[in-house]
Length: 277
Image 1: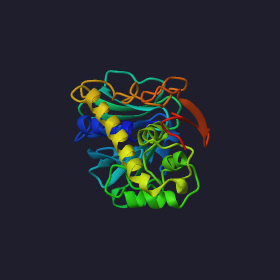
Image 2 (image 1 turned 90 degrees about the vertical axis):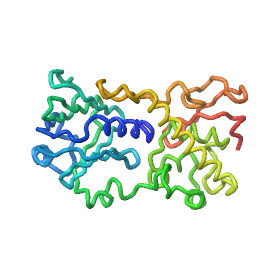
Image 3 (image 1 turned 120 degrees about the vertical axis):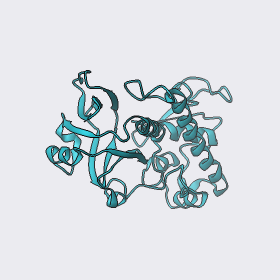
């Protein structure tokens, strides 16, 4: 599932490729994609509108329209966006197609059909059931040492599970949680309230550093190339992982063997030497 850096990459690509284009019509090919409205009503509210800006909240993409509505989009596991000319046919995995007056179209493809779209009034966006429970953005001003220290002190869950809880840390998923804990030198099995308060600043700075590094990698791969291409580039950080998906390989720091454990039905990768309990 795309995490904060991948979603941010999509947001930046959309800001370069779809703003100001008039939506001629919207075709919903997979009705269950749409939440809270019937597909026909959804399409009617979008027809004739323009995307005025694109933002992000956690793992949600926020496509703001010029008619006081915002389209919430969650890519889930396999969602992808393509911005192509009208002559290109859509594939069997297409769930929705936005047709623009200039002959281009924005296609949302989703092989597993887990993606979600929801239209809401922009004025009540932060009160929606999707966004209201989300924690402060880890790259925003609300994600402070005091905030993170308070979150950890109140729970006996493992620190890895805390980082995956979107009501505690917004946007971080399985990949970057493992990477941040390695960078911080913290064992993923430590309980939240068992982490020394003195180590919280290092954990916070590691989360921010890993996320920013992945976003920067995505920008380098996408900058100046995607407006003429069909889709944003996925896997912005792949190939640069320190521990994630490297079970059995040697640690880049100490040479120990990377281990994998299961926490909350998710795989966790760590170095048993660099991340001692």
